[in-house]
Amino acid sequence: MSIPTEPVGSLPRPTKLQAAYAAYDAGKITKQELEKEQDAACLDSIKRMEATGAPIVSDGEQRMSSFATYPLTDTLNGTGLADGLAADGQYFAIFTDGHHRQLPRLTRGPFRYKTYAGEFTTKAVKMATKPIKQAVIAPSMLLLLYPLDGKVEGYSREQFMHDLVDECEKDIRGAFKAGAKRVSIDFTEGRLACRNDPNNPWTGRNMLREFIVLNNRVLDRFSPEERRNIGIHTCPGGDCDSTHSADVDYADLLPSMFQMNAGYFLMQLSSEKDKERIYKLIGQHSRADANGVAQVCFIGVINPQNPRVETPQEVCDDLIAASKFIPKERLGSTDDCGFSPFSIDVKPKHGSPDAARDIAFQKIKARVEGTRLASEKLGSAKAA
Image (tube, rainbow, N blue to C red):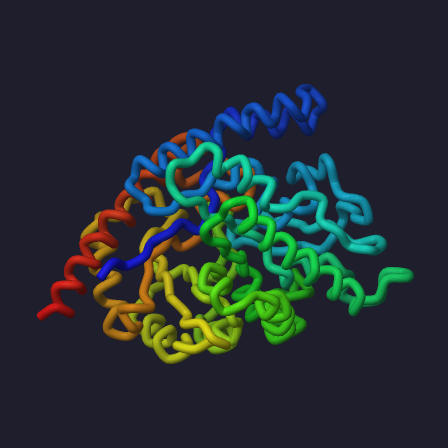
């Protein structure tokens, strides 16, 4: 048997690219000059990922302001913010090291994306010799653009949600049309929704169920055949080598998460203290038939927040352990999270973005090699 393996999406942006983002925000370089640096970083990302032996690659999200805000703004500082948005939205997350990330605020409708992920896919496909995977943002994250209390004048929450579902469907279909083999939906807000942080009001609203229903409104617009290649990614955050919800028990999330009718799930697991307990939960709650598609479970075997490079044997051992609880035909491997979901990230535990970038490719190579070892062992056991 061959265990599938794929990245979540992002890679650390080179120091030179991060400097270009800052220069663009300051008006010191043009959009074309920024795009030149993005092109170089994307090409380097794809070629180096291909060199690891990875069967499917990404451009490392080098063109994205972040995994969450790419449809809305050119940069994290708000340069190029889309019409109908203001920069002073609510915090998406407050991380354990004290820093936070903020979303824009919806000021008027109708809601429309400024940029679609397929625009990145189109460019990445031309640079790659292997299949391209594209990550997109979940409607549940963008739901937080709408004020928690009150209304946007002349634009109800219900109408916003209708437009949001349309835009998310368009985003996914556009990525496939541009040549993506796989599209995964980032759902880091799922675990955070199970946490009640008094400093972050939306986390105390018990929004997980609403998130699941909204995301299924998008997923259910796709056929079972299409959904086999549409995934959901969950993690406790991974920004500046820090997390936002690692203290939330997976038992609070997984039973609900697997109610989403996606064909596969990418789950942070390498950094969990009791992996076996989580493997059991995945085996119990993942579905062999999710409205016509079997849910494949990609377990995290690489920790992007830790500069130590895992060995292929460690990766193999995790997969063998997981196979005792997750059906082998529905088992895959991935990284716990994107390596740098936000474009500006100094990677403090790694020393620099460039050092973190080098380490990321070493980790990916270990994932690929360790997955191959596990495939051989499980295949031999099956044959015996």
